Image 1 (tube, rainbow, N blue to C red):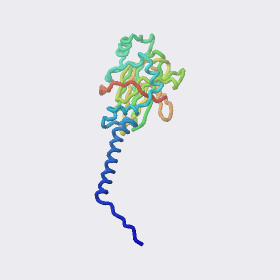
Image 2: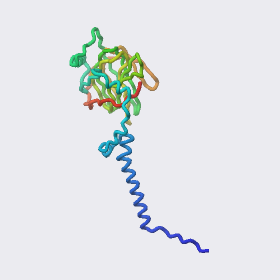
Image 3: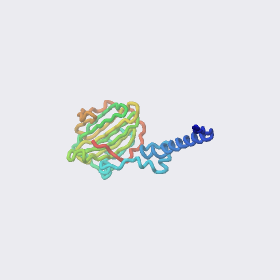
Length: 246
């Protein structure tokens, strides 16, 4: 019986196969960088995703919390990031918006500092009555994800409203409580290093609490002993786009 003759592939065929495989890998890598990363994760190292509009596919749908917050006016009044939270600035900011300072209101000061390990988060809230004002400034040693939100006692977390949602190293402003409830911030460290967040606030807060994985923890409000060093300039806080509940 005659054995079948197997013809070895030519060098030209092998080269074509390698070239074809290399081209396929290159095309797949280019598609990953230019389209998949921008569309799925909002990561756009080349700028092509932004130019083509595919980064919008990675943006979460606007939440109910954000929509409710956008309907409010004269609740969050942004200030320059380096503004010290003083009674004079609070009064002047309210007057500029024709918002009266509630009669007989007692203003208290508070400073809160926490170090967030990588990918850890914390919420810090104040209890404020409807119409109660607060001036604040917080800063972080690196950019953090922040959600400034509140919810009323009457209705609970299902009626949470978000007023600022962004990634920033700091924020300053005057806040006027739209309802009686708890009001404050959620911060998440999305870096590989610890980040320290420091908050200075002055207002008609009646108590404070934090929320973490273990639940709610009451905390005593403690006025700052001395002025902080001037904060580094922070970008303007963006309009909210999505908010976690809590």
